Length: 73
Image 1 (cartoon, rainbow, N blue to C red):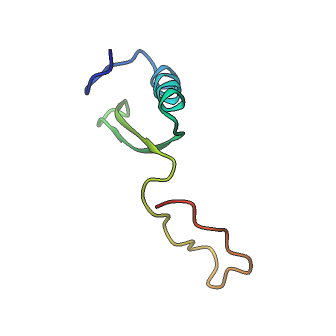
Image 2 (cartoon, rainbow, N blue to C red):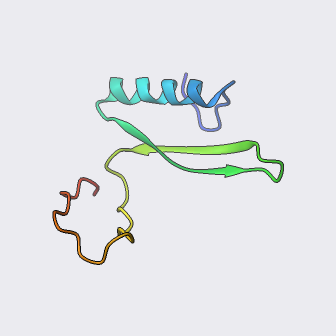
């Protein structure tokens, strides 16, 4: 039923599928990076658990007055 390299007709179809899979398995997801071809078509999209990875530093301000709690692990 689920396999690596699955192909979808649309970006939203892929997101809905994986979001439902995550809900059944007990986690939520977010969109990570994507790859586009030279002519601008998206050829790869990565979905990850919402807690995966680390946030990048906020480059807008040097001193953050009220930093948000870290949610990723």
